[in-house]
Image (cartoon, rainbow, N blue to C red; front, side, top):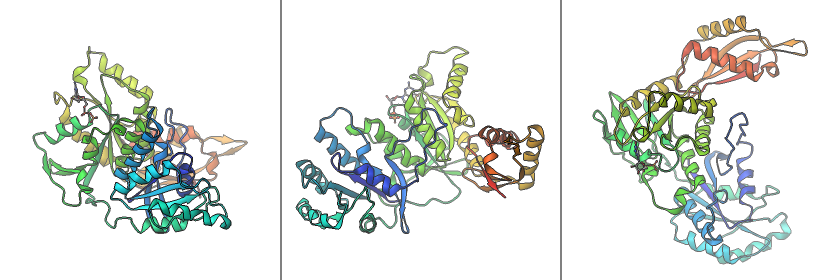
Length: 433
Ligand code: GDP
């Protein structure tokens, strides 16, 4: 999908515009500890266009001076986006900070659309003319707080969306990515996988933009490692900022079937690990937890069990994900990774038979009576699998409100016991028949 980024100095209304364009799409998942949604990246659509949108203002750069922060945010936009919306404040006229942003954007070979915010009524329209001086052509008047002018702005931005954004891979290709904080060893792991005996690596045809993926074949299966370049590319200051790495991770997760959540075995689990894993879970991707640098951990026969328990305690929502302890450095257990990716990917795409599914559900109901509320009891009529990637089940009932979270969880566990589904989240929805 094309990527649109919003840039501009602070207080011009970037987050307001972002939220307007995104609408209600971002769900806050409260039952996952440690996962708070950063509203900096989301999918969105306008008419027939689907795209992703970045609020670069949400990427805080740390204690850098003001102008340096603006500069780095603009550079992120230039690196990541296909189209940049340069946002200014119509009530304040052109400021020197706007001019600084403009200077950086001139150098970018990316299309820029200039939007003048806070034009809340037609009388204010003449205030946009000042902004021609920024040199980005016609300024588009908009009002984030009133939701005005966004259609015209997005029409203009959509003209610059690339026609062929990403290489499409065949359905039998397993797409996976490695996600984790800087320095957990993602690029070392990629190299270890690519350097393995039976792996055949081929270059990807396509544009430079596509060439960030690596294709490989192993035991007759085909794989793509998503965003290899993003893992290898290093050195820019902002790349060490947490939100920037989260942004990269989100983009890779979106294009993957299977996500390898990489944890540094030496450092243990930190908050950001959970956040990143939470995104992959919410996105419904298959997940394998990889504990890297296991060679560097001082251990006895209990260490692995303890570490595993620690992971299970922290990542309660990932109870379906297998965990592998390995070392990119010594290559120990690297060969177990691809078979785990295979299993997770198969389960992610699996369909179960409706009759068997209903037997499982009915047995579950017989074992543990459905919940009641104010004298009304939940009745389950039948269940059906409506989607794969991840497996998604609809359970038809008398009153969906009676489906309590804990009962849904119980049904999920029964389905898992019956069918496996190791490595993949599954989704269950109650619908009124
Ligand atoms: P990335 O930022 O996640 O891609 O991390 P890198 O692959 O660049 O690795 C960061 C550092 O950890 C480098 O100094 C690596 O040599 C080191 N490293 C990576 N994997 C291992 C491992 O399995 N064991 C040890 N001891 N060090 C590792």
